[in-house]
Structures are given as structure tokens and as C-alpha cells.
Image (cartoon, rainbow over all chains, first blue to last red; front, side):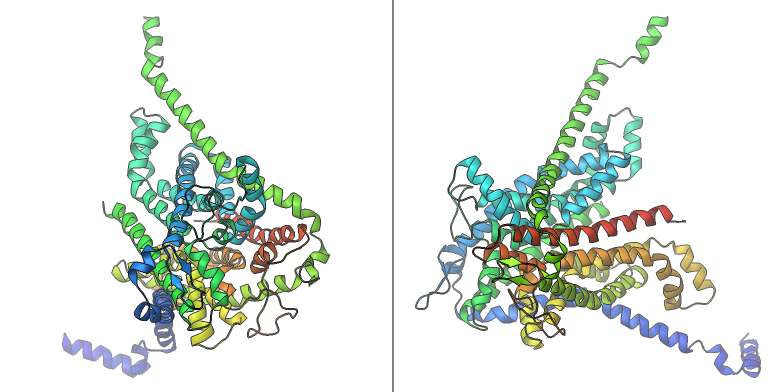
Length: 316
Length: 296
């Protein structure tokens, strides 16, 4: 056997030269080079996420080590960063602002987007479904600065007129704007989750005589539960991190809200509004980056748990 | 006998109730869908009514005048085009190669899952954090200063997931048999991708690119501190210049310019929405046309 292999090698070598058996021609090297290039691009997303963390931390960590008093930072509502003598950095009011606006937005967005997703995925058919899907996709594309503008010029006078309050830039305004903004995104994610439930589940239930609603309620929703929860979480993440719309529609007053008609200020909006006035490397500049670290970590955790929850269904 | 037979096929009371419940829920969810969509359409209608009057060729092609209180949007429009094009030049190649890796090379393991998680995070990190990153990395660390280049790099990093996801989907839609046939002819992996997989998915990739244009054009926060300025009378000459941008221009006109003519911000908003929605509709129409054309 060994002899015959050697013999055939020798024959080939005699006929075409040893190189013809060697696959390492130009194409082979191109293939390897591309493989490296593709791999580098493939991991670029990881590099960028690490880069975001590293650079935001690099600019903000100085404050964490030198000035950060955890108790004052998280538990006092006094935000006077530009006070020359005694600046105070308490983000409690800012967190309350973000939480109240995001919370109200989710109250608006979650039921409606789940309802819309169920309607589009389970009840609507043919052209209606296609039209609704396109519409939802287009609504999701409206830029956040336009939403902020809508809050400023359309919602603001409406709220003043309807509720007879002096200022219409408040938790209610920003909550509705943010809810309308997050709803299309959540609708498409939720609809994808419902579509991911295999049709044979539905067919089996319908063969047992179940109505559309029974199929949806007893079969599709339990099967899509994790996907829906993941979608809701991603929506929360989006609302939490929204900047321009919140900056323009909340009224931007540092305040722990008592009612939905109070003006508030969000964490994200604070960075957007104040970063331009700060000195690079100064204390105020660093504290804004520290808020950035906080935002990064919270959204990272939200996205991670959304991912883990969605993965849960694949395994189960 | 006959009566018994008809009774058998008549809906029982339970069936009738179930049917009624189902109709009720159908109506409920239908209304919810409408309530989600109608207010937005009303709002958009209001914008069109209030801003439609100001839109003209002159509005698009003249610079702002009288301290931005009147005049057009030309420098902002040009700036947005600069920003979007530069960002695309950077993010599209990397995004497509990243998608090729995920679709053609990566196995189903923890490493791939980490990449996917990173992509979700890239899309999910607040835009203002991207702005901080852009400022810390591109403006200061790499020393590009506040310039189109720094702003576009920030935008590119932020919107790359759009290209990756769209490209990966269209690559995976190419049947595996196509690749196997090509490998059997002795082609290398890259030859297969370039000659077989990419030509069969190029239109799908284009859909993603158009979608990314729309996303990039609308972003405001990431460019605020990295390259876009409130006002500059000059049009950008190179990627190292600062520029105005439509999205930031809308923010400025709506909040920072006292005494602005009332319809100007509406007009800016309309131009921005028009740009974004046209791009999006094009992408959707393209996708539908593709679906109709698909041969396998």
C-alpha cells in the first residue's frame, strides 16, 4: 500500500510537477487572507462594545475615584454641577425623571404594542397584514428629534388646553411621546416572536376545534412568552436610553415628580444638554461621563437579560 | 332523523360563546392597533399641514438667513449628506464582512453568541453614550477634533448592526445547496462566497444599506459633540471640517432660536421626515419586489 502511494506520487510528480498536488496556489492564499479579514470584521462588534466601555470609563473614572460619594451621588436630588464654590452631584432626581418617563411610556406602549402584534400576527390576513406591517415599520423609523419636536409644538399646547396646566412639558408629555416611539419597535419584535411559533402548533389546536382567540391565548402566547418578554425588555432599554425626545419634551427641570404634570429631567438629557458647556477633563465633564458609564451598564444588563430570556425558549 | 342531523351540525351554545369571544378579541386588538397608528398619522398630518407651505426648492437650496430665523436648510442638508456618506463608507464594508463571518464561517458556539450579544448591545446602548464614546475616542484620543470624520465614525459604529442584521439574513436565505455545488467544483470558500453567495444576496444587502441611510440621517445625539455644529455659514470642504446637520438643525431651530418664523422648524422637520421615510419606503418596496422575484 505504502509502496503504491509513493509510486503514484512519483507518477504525478513526473507528469505535472510536484506543485500540481500542492493546493497552496494563489486562490488558496486569497482564501486564507479573506478568512482573516472576515474574522476581524466579525469580531468588530465586540471590539466596538469594549471600546465604548473603555473610552467612556477612561473619561469618567477620574470622578469615580476622586470625588464620588456613593451616598450623595445616588441618594440626593441636588444637581448643581456648575456651582463654582460647591458643586453638588446628586442624580436621584435625574433617575426619578428617567424612571417616571420610561415607566409611563411602557404603561402606554406595552399593552398596545402586544395587542397590535397579536392582531397583526394572528388575526389580520393578506393585504391588511402587509399594510399594517409596513406602517409599523415606517413609524419605527421616525427620528427621535422629530418626536421631541412633536412633543414641543403639538403635545405641549394640547396638554395645556386639555388639562388646564401652566406647562405642558412634563412626565405625561414625554411618556406619551416615548410610548408612541417605542411601541412600533416593540410591536415588530413581539410580532417576530409570535411568528416564530411553528404553524403546526396552531394547526393542531385548530384541528381540535379551537377558535382563533383560543389558539392565540392557549397555544401561541405561552409558546412565545419568552420572546415577548425579551421584546418588552428591549423596548424598556430603548425608552431608558432615549435622548433627544426626552430632552425636548420633559421640560428639563431637575425635580422629583409628584404628579404626571410635573416637569422632570432625564439622565440622558442631562448629558446632552450640559456636555457642550463643560471643560474637557473637568469635574463636571467627568461626572457626565460617569452617568454615561451608569447608562451603559444598565442597558448592557437589560440587553443581556433580554438575550438570555429569548435564548431560554430555544433550549426549552 | 332529519332534525337530529341538523342539530348535530348546529353550533352548540359553547361554540357560539367561543365564537363571540373570539370576535370580541379580534375587535379589541384591531382597535388597539388602530390606536397605536392613528395618533401618529394625525401628528404627521399636522406637521404636513403646518410645514407644507414653507417647503419649496428655495427652502431646500438656500442657506438660513437673519440669524437662522428665516431662510432655507441648504448647509444642513449638505452636511447630513456628507455625514451619511462618510458613515456608510466606513460601516458598510465592515458590516458586510461581519455578516459574512456570522453567516458563512461562524459555528454555533459561545463565541458566536458573544458576537450576537455585542451586536444587540451596539444597537441598544443609548445614543448619548455613543456620543460620549465618539467624543472620548475619535475627537480626543485619535485627535480628529470635532469633524465630519469623528461624527461619521460615531454614527458608523452606532448603525452598523442594521447592515449586519440585514446582510446576514439575506446571506442565510441563499440555499445551502448552492454553496455545496460550488465547493464540489473545487472552489475555495471565498470563491464560493464571491461568485455564488454574494450575487444571490446583493439586493437584500442593498435593502439593509438603504435602511442604514435612513437611520443615520435621523440621529442627533451622537453628532452633537463630535462634528455637527449649531450654525456655520460654510459648506464642508473635507471630512475634517465641522458641519451643520438636518437633525441637529431641527433641535436648534425648535429650542435655541428665539423669534424664529413659526413655519421654519415645521419645514425642517418635514424635510427630515421626508428624507427618512422615503429611504425606508424604498427599502421596503425593494424587499417586496425581491420577495416576488425569488426563484427558490
